[in-house]
Image: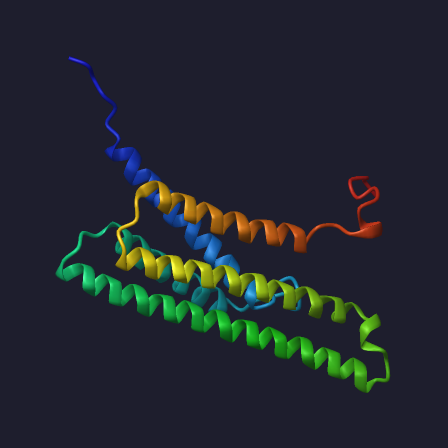
Length: 193
């Protein structure tokens, strides 16, 4: 008789770590959408708790929707998953809008002071944040389409993983291109002061 590995514990561990990873990832997206470290230096405790709550609900119901068998409970879980997605997207869009308003207020103050706004650092942040918003919303739209298709169509495991990986590669590649070092910032950036 050949002994086999008991993968039940590993599967539970994998699911827990995957859940934590996804919660942190989506919470970070909400923090970025709020303009944290781009146009705002701090985020209130209330905003941090809201970001973590929306991300946690989003991920728990997403994982439940993916792993529950078809039946009466599946419909309830799918409804809660869709509600959590709507709450997450609502918070994301509200955060992006507030960050854009903050940037526009800075640009207006600079313009009213008589300066050319295109020569200011806030204008560069404005351009970068606009690009970030487009990347974020496009990636989220891809995830939303994926989730809707996954909920209603039985997708083979390999196609499912490949689709998730392609969306992640698209998002991370776009962010890497957006936040790459440019021009003079590339030169000697590793030297100690």
